[in-house]
Length: 323
Image 1 (tube, one colour):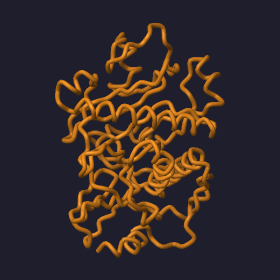
Image 2: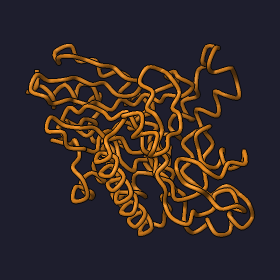
Image 3: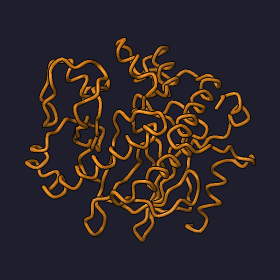
Image 4: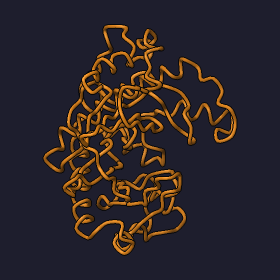
């Protein structure tokens, strides 16, 4: 979508979803959550964009794009494993089962890629070949396809700490998961990734890696939570240009959503300095990329709202029965 088409919606943002009538609020970096007494959780995806451990801006339609992209995938993977979804009362809202989130974060990787300290490419470039309980072959190039997808689990830092790489043996010896939980979680994650890669290929995309979050419900079942195969939780590349760019040693072509992050990082120390005012055109350009990503991933057209009703008013109206 051309970002010029989004200019009338520059103020159409959900920067905050505080709803006093809803009980037990928890406000995260980008989601506002409310726990109902009957074990359900209302999860509202705001349009906030987070980086450098702070909120940078609000991007029109970002929360709706991520909610609806995740919905697309939840509905098409429900035969693989149970998920937390109960209903979607609003385009930016999911009502879900409240889960006890497991203390292990799961990333499935199909390619030697990544930039963070826990990514396999970073570790590989340090000379490591044994990682996450796997051994990678020598002589691999940046962004090369792995012999087979692998699970790279990390500890889940709940209180601002740093995620640390784990092996299956460490997961079991530290009591983070039982052997049965790890077997089930691993089976689910690899099956979800296989489905995701196959469907992405039909859309001209490569699903290079993705993050999954699992929890347990009241009966102890392992349930998929959070989001699945969205532009924020997954690394997608364009399949058509991948071979040529890989052969040339170039980074694969992808959805570039990091305009705002890069712009801020070039102008200040984003961890310490005040954030400068971000140009409106850049915010709209980022919104356009999110919408393009969703349309490409799902094959479904994103419909801009016909009315000028502010997002929070719409959400309040659609959630009134929960007050």
